[in-house]
Structures are given as structure tokens and as C-alpha cells.
Image 1 (tube, rainbow, N blue to C red):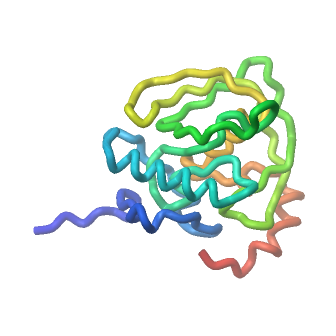
Image 2 (cartoon, helix red, strand yellow):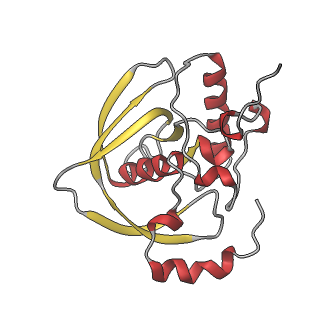
Length: 184
């Protein structure tokens, strides 16, 4: 007797990893925690990095944006300032904790899974990011500015949340007509 895997636990072949577009179901599902830190994980992360590099304006890419349902994202580690954009770093099982005094700041956000769409999203721009690296080692870092915004955007993705869920009602109504009829 064979065991049937749920859609959620299936992973695309490494060569099939590419950005899925809204309204793909993977964009509204929660990803699973990474438990196995093995060669397959590292190969998938390397493919995510390649895909991100193919987008000149991309800052980050979550695994769920490729229908790979694990809590992983990659992003440039220094998206603004001197030596920008920095290196592409993998963040596994990430958690962002906003700084107590960090007031949310509204700014336009775009998304690789929503080409041609940008909406205002409010986010705190300072906080603590904890994650595991490709070997499973735990890390912690204070992040701010665009890096804080990017990490929260990607953590939203692996939690099944898009910028459409985070924007205000007026902005959502304004982009709705451009979303109708989109195929994934």
C-alpha cells in the first residue's frame, strides 16, 4: 500500500523551482518548519538564490512563492546603503520580533508573485530576527529599514499572507480590477 502525500508536503523538483503567480494556492498556505538540514535543502536554497538573481528589482524570495512549502526565504542581506545590495542569505525557520518602540511605517511594497502591483503596507522598521542557517545553526540579528521590511514581507509569505492581506481597503479596491482573470 502506498502512502499518498498531501499537496502541502510535496516539493517541486529543484529544476522546477520558479516563481508562482497570484492567485496560486501556495501563496495562501502556511509553510512547514524545516527539520532536515541536508544536501537537498541546500540545493533548493541555491536554486531559490538563482531565481532571485534573475529578478533585477527583487530583494527577497520565499520558498512558498515557488510552491515549496517550507519555512525558508532568501534575501539580500544589505539592501540599502554602502555595498548594497550585499549577499543573498538564506533564512530558515525565521522569526521577527518588532522592537517595542518601533512605530509602523507605511511604504509601497511590490511582490514577485504579483507583477505590476504595489500597495502601501505598514510595518515596524526595527526588530530582532532569529533564524537557522543551512547547517541548522541558530542566529540572531537586529534588523532595520529595508531589511526589516523585506524579512517581514518574506515571513508573511511563508505564513500564507501576501501584501494584499496587509494593505488598506482603499488600496486593495484600487488593485482588484487588475487581479481579475489572473491565472496561476
